[in-house]
Amino acid sequence: MNEIVVSEMKLEHIDEVYNIFINSLKVKWSIEDFKKELENKLARYFVALQNDKVVGFGGMWVIIDEAHITNVAVHPNHRRSGIGDKLLRCMYKFCADNNIIGITLEVRENNLVAQNFYKNLGFAVEGRRKKYYQDTGEDAIIMWNRNINP
Image 1 (tube, one colour):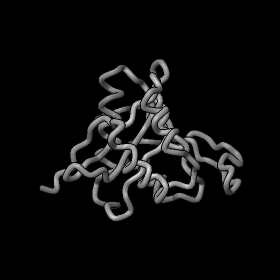
Image 2 (cartoon, one colour; image 1 turned 180 degrees about the vertical axis):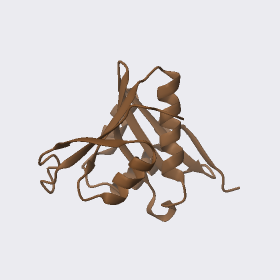
Image 3 (cartoon, rainbow, N blue to C red; image 1 turned 30 degrees about the vertical axis):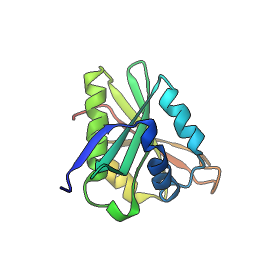
Image 4 (spheres, rainbow, N blue to C red; image 1 turned 90 degrees about the horizontal axis):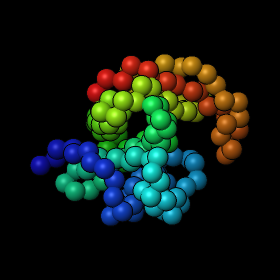
């Protein structure tokens, strides 16, 4: 069965999540960073599983009634198959169930694929952080979704 199941991330998923992370995102995190996130009371992380193998993940911090997406990534071999959409919808459901009124994120100014993905899921551009990404000096586009619909 090739069905995608989204569930909360557990310690047993860390190695697979980290593998996806280093093959998808330019930001530097370690396995220890992910372990700390699982202990962080503000953080919520989800994994997309196919045949019990992690094929994508997403994380966010929940602060009072807002959420900030820290990262979302899908394994390169599984992109454009709806996994990112399933992860975001799971995150939206968590937010709706917990009275979260808005969700935000930063995305690289040159990552138009990601920006369009988020726009299709209800996000709108609301600002810019100059030279936000240390590795390139690239600006971050700030996006918000204030109408969370699972």
